[in-house]
Amino acid sequence: IENIILPRIDELPENTVDLLAWQLHVDFYEPLSLSLEKKRELVKNAVVWHKKKGTRRAVEQLVKTVFFDDFKVEEWFVYNGKPYYFRIVIEDGSIKTREEYNLLIQAINSAKNTRSHLEKIISKSNVCNKLYFGASVKKIHSITVK
Image 1 (tube, helix red, strand yellow):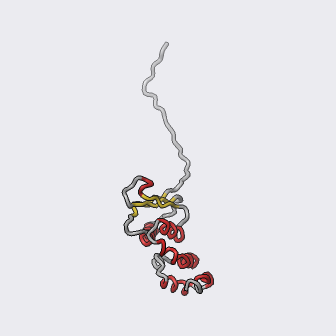
Image 2: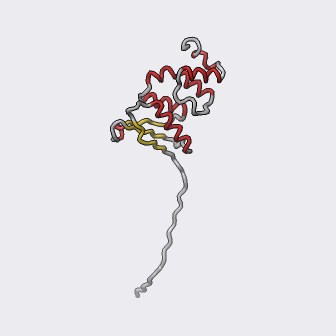
Image 3: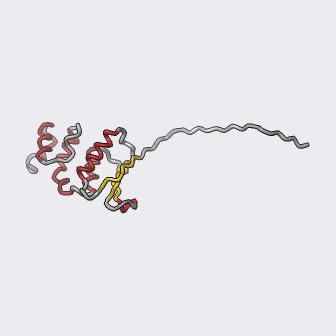
């Protein structure tokens, strides 16, 4: 199957791609209504990802394919956390709803090893606003010096 069908996956219709995903046991495929391009990308990488499953790289590749590019996976020894914990740092603040957050957690859990635990997801965003401030002075006592 890998030598005959996968090289032509960009030509296959969506229902065939869905069947290939089922046959290749593509993790994190069913819950999302993904675009055909993302489905194809998941199927193309399924065999390689199963070999890397449980590694930091597997988590990074799945999150990058399905969600966004600008993020980091930081392991516990990088940020002085508890052993076997890791966190995701999203640089562009692209998680906006609770549903997106839950889908991200579900994707991470499908790719990480069972020993490691997701400690937190940090979503950074840059907001540029003007800040106005003012002050007033109130005269309470008056002293006149001659």
